[in-house]
Image 1 (cartoon, rainbow, N blue to C red):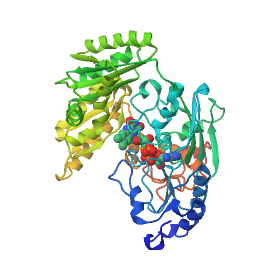
Image 2: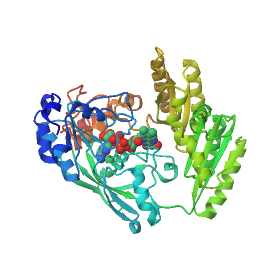
Image 3: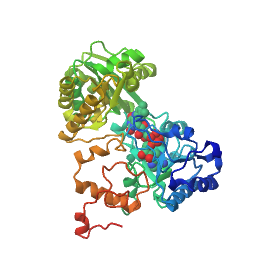
Image 4: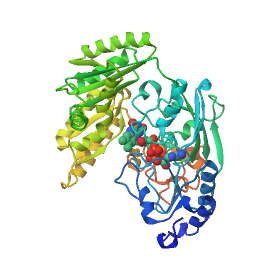
Length: 496
Ligand SMILES: Cc1cc2nc3c(=O)[nH]c(=O)nc-3n(C[C@H](O)[C@H](O)[C@H](O)COP(=O)(O)OP(=O)(O)OC[C@H]3O[C@@H](n4cnc5c(N)ncnc54)[C@H](O)[C@@H]3O)c2cc1C
């Protein structure tokens, strides 16, 4: 804990808590100095900023539980944080709360190829799991683009996805067990190494709960056998319409590639400016399609995919001859978010989902929105999953542009809902999209979700203010209550 001269004036609820935490963790593991607290004021969505009341840096699960129990005793809210790369403000601190940072829980406890499992602490970085499993012939399949820095605990909380989740599934398909610290401070196990335990699927409920149901302190992950063969192609199409139709045709043919990624002309322009990836000239869209598996299957399916791309208008198809060329294909895609900074000073990264078959239509409508509002939109996304990442470009220095960009960004989410999709694919709801939840869910839907949250956390201390637009039903914070919920009325659920 920093010396008295460095301490900020603590909000009343935190007055004695800093000393209690220092007693539990040691002085060096508790941050109270305002300058150092500012390091944690935002996650990857930097336009939301809140300086946390306190930061705690526990070293193990017992310390996480002790910190949570101290928060409960002091009636102080807490927020878990992994690496802070989230893009929805999920790890945004609470000004009068404790930010519990898991980055020192970094042990890979076990790698068991025979069981196809790894057991890791939550602060372990995603890519480190594959590095530990590779020598055994295995890897960890979910691969968010941030995999070099994001933590497994954050992946669990966000149910993170990645380019190769089309074939292998999201995080939720790769977590078989958890140890969590509940919002009461108890250590509880959900699931384990074996599959399908009886009872409610609380493991499934926890994955994707964005830190609102407790803190994961140990994660049992499913490992996947390294594929015998990987083949990758880059195809240039005249338009996003054609590339979208090719995507649907590939999946419709029964082939499930490991990944199908799309970039439109503006995204390609940005990537070329940044990393000179040499994508096909004049392309209205490119697809990267990757197949993996047993060599004989991959060869046969690859030929079919090439044919389908041609049938749907691909005018140039390059097949990666080796790992270096494959890496070059991916370089443009992986650099795309950051590359957009080359063509626009500011941008909003949107994340929405649509049925794959609606890709062409929705991309056309996004183009129309862009023209109507005079706001450029670059599209770079997981086409196989229908998981869009429109990048809405603006210049904050020009009055009104930020508002226009927000408007277009919101209208894109409306489009996703109109076409039967969702307001978020993989970045979570967090702080940023809580306001959009009523676009997709009725009040009763939201209240029903809150009943689950209340069952874990009736006092509303775990990551309050996230996911839900209005606190209701349980005592998250005083707010609007809607009277008796229909489920209560029917005696199906109770509020406690
Ligand atoms: C450049 C870039 C690219 C990205 N690409 C992708 C992508 O391809 N796919 C994708 O899905 N995401 C992507 N993301 C978003 C982000 O990396 C993921 O959401 C990631 O899972 C967050 O992990 P983190 O450790 O940074 O979590 P944080 O940002 O620290 O926290 C995220 C949420 O998890 C909660 N949390 C953290 N640790 C725990 C824990 N132990 N127990 C319970 N709750 C916890 C926090 O309270 C918060 O709600 C990207 C981000 C960036 C910056």
